[in-house]
Length: 103
Image (cartoon, rainbow, N blue to C red; front, top):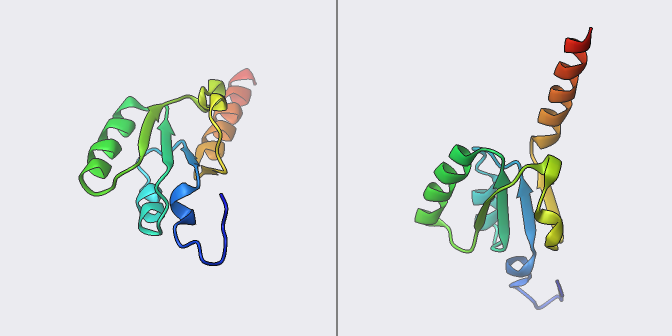
């Protein structure tokens, strides 16, 4: 990203993937901190649409995509940062539920 001491705009160039964003407002916090290249993904069509509508009113430069991290299409893109706020919790709980059903 080229973060030099006098480079005040480096945050705007950091490519961030916010996977499993759901209804979290983390993208808004990141935007307020100066990050602009944010790709928010979730498996829920409703979550993506609702959060995109909310963000489009206040925040610019973000992208919203339907994506299932278990079969992600994001591998075709490059990111400096990948954020997972709760996706791993969901995946672990899903595996635990499957294991309990086998008992």
